[in-house]
Image 1 (cartoon, rainbow, N blue to C red):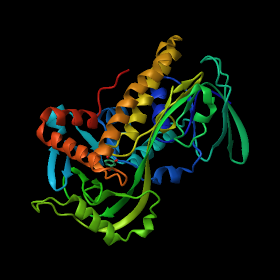
Image 2: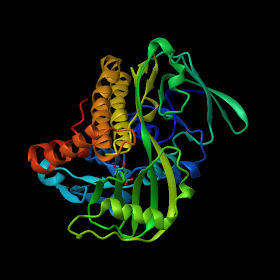
Image 3: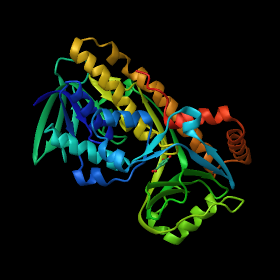
Length: 396
Ligand code: DHB
């Protein structure tokens, strides 16, 4: 088989790219190794930057988001019992949307299948090869197993959107890629609970006992996270212990904050990592999303960076497809990496400011506290945090 763009990985980056390309008249095939039910049930983050919301609107995946998503104008820090509000809408004129990644993925899948466009589940990619050389001669090769047989797909361009552990990045020779990495000495224990959100706004808390985050999925469902040691088994935490810890870490000194408790319906542990592979292109192979970079979850940049990558890539591919001009494709890696490194810095900043590093010395703690005090005191500093949180303008 042949196509113009072979997309390896049917998560949000690969699916959205297929839709952006279709809108621009460019054919693609999406190959996803997992079953549809698995892709649609993974619990991930839930904050969409305004630019991410725009991209979902552009491809027509906005009806359920508008009906059930929760627009948020701001968020709060709870810093050792003091509340610091960040009014994003007042400071930057833009808001974010709470709409879970799993819901985004469900809509993108349903739309693709409704259109009758190629999207295969349980298509295990065995290799990505013949990617050295120019874009446009149909020579890129993806070999995959589907329905008990092996298949070959030839494409002008191969895009790897198959995540950090995917096969696409491995098709780049070691000497052609440089990686940057930081692993953190803590993880997040995340829960979903049948409990109304405890406040209208998200709460990011720093406390001597560690980080806590209160988020939500609907007016009756709370999503929350606490910092735990690496290697923690989620079943070692009882429901009561999780609520007690969330309560202790998010409490305000004046007693004005009360935590709503409820039945916990999902528990999982996520390790935290920063990672960037440069460049994001090798010959006919382009990497996007987690296949090229990972951020720790604090600040919810992972999905948003993946969406920004494929917006830039879709424009570049459409220009090449229509005119043969390759300048935008040649610029893709540098353009995408500028935003990626902004996201890396913001996510690292939020993570180090809000967590207790078990190996940190008191100097690190004092710096984090001073950082939070600066946010409380300075409106211009709060504006800068708000701009990063809701997402800077896309640099095409
Ligand atoms: C959520 C996750 C995040 O990492 C974050 O910074 C905010 C919200 C969430 O899952 O709702």
